[in-house]
Length: 158
Image 1 (cartoon, one colour):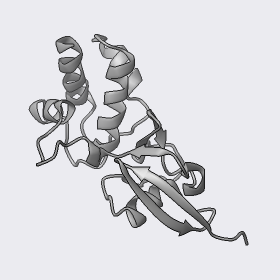
Image 2 (cartoon, rainbow, N blue to C red):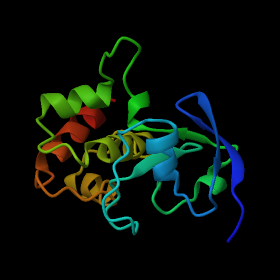
Image 3 (spheres, one colour):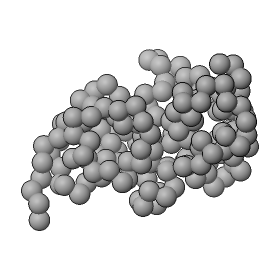
Image 4 (cartoon, one colour):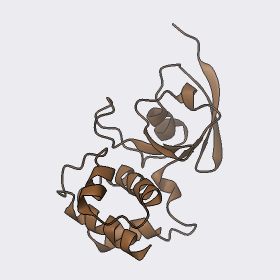
């Protein structure tokens, strides 16, 4: 068995240091070492995308990355979206306004994925493009229409 390694991962601007087993996932590190429960783990095979986080500016599946691979990198989770004091970010407010949540399990990953889509496709309002942009996250409740509407509302405003 490989030996545990010391890692430092900056999550939401705060350095988290721990000694981890080589096969410990980034998702588990975020939830257990950093104590941030917004990153959800479902399939653990990279299919559902519910564990999506942002690594060095790009969305990744945290269940497919080992914590040792993220050593020295910047990670952002859904907890970083709220302003100090708890004010909702623009994307969180759009999801609220359009009732784009139902059970809420996919919402953290969907918010981060939608934000990346809006960053990479400014002004894109077509339903097809938005659905393609969020296709990496599985939602089992909403049928996606409210999510598409929330994202479109921000794309129109940009």
